[in-house]
Image 1 (cartoon, helix red, strand yellow):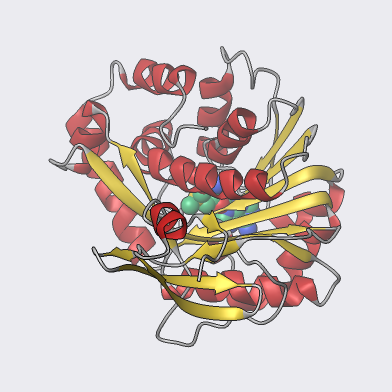
Image 2: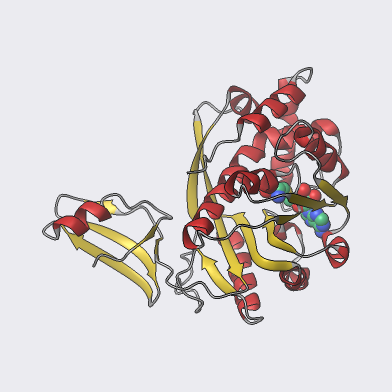
Length: 325
Ligand SMILES: C[S@@+](CC[C@H](N)C(=O)[O-])C[C@H]1O[C@@H](n2cnc3c(N)ncnc32)[C@H](O)[C@@H]1O
């Protein structure tokens, strides 16, 4: 299984960049960038090489973990998918390209696209000595204009990006992303109600343009969740010493919440149910909230159903499972 933690080559490249930079300065910049994100300003405060590095140190481990978890779910439902060409839109420091390279050894050609010059420079530096990503192409430009000129790719990824585009422009961006998708489009957003709302709007819009869901949903119907509930998942990742210092954090790990959808050109048959929250396991039964091909189900697996109970005990939030009820 692909690890949610940054690959050794990327960790080493980030550590190498950090040498010579003051960690307290990087921490201050990361805090200012994060404040701007929380206030809806997106990545506009990432202007210099140091800003880009501070952002990458603070956020890349978590967005990498979220993309890796989403790709894992996609691979489980489509084990034969072997993309050759990747298009990473709103690539920033190259997070999704690194995650996709780990998930798909078949990938040969990596095109990244972003409007931020400082993040582009950092991405190219980080990938420079990589055995997998050396020679990546990185287009600098506004996504919609750059996408219009881009070639199609087997796998298109937009990770933590569509929220930075105004709501009115998101539909047009979704259509462009889909136009450039030869096989599969993965969109990942923060696991907040707002991030989920963007995912669900894009999902509905593209299903209307003949897309099919590969993951996480086991169906192409309307999402059965009702507000204030929302579909999201969580991925635990380890924090390195530098990561803790930049974030001013004590805990050796963090849990990244994310929402995602993977859409394909061809329908994916037989998608299993999805666990939508951490199941409750007691000595009497396992209770789990599942999204099933028929809709939402609060499944109870009693202990007396020995084999089913043993298997349901291992269910984790986000897993694809056979409904044992
Ligand atoms: C939160 S970062 C995510 C970076 C990376 N995909 C990740 O998951 O770590 C969002 C990225 O989208 C880029 N972006 C936002 N709006 C854009 C636009 N209209 N055109 C191109 N890039 C854009 C930003 O420059 C930034 O690098």
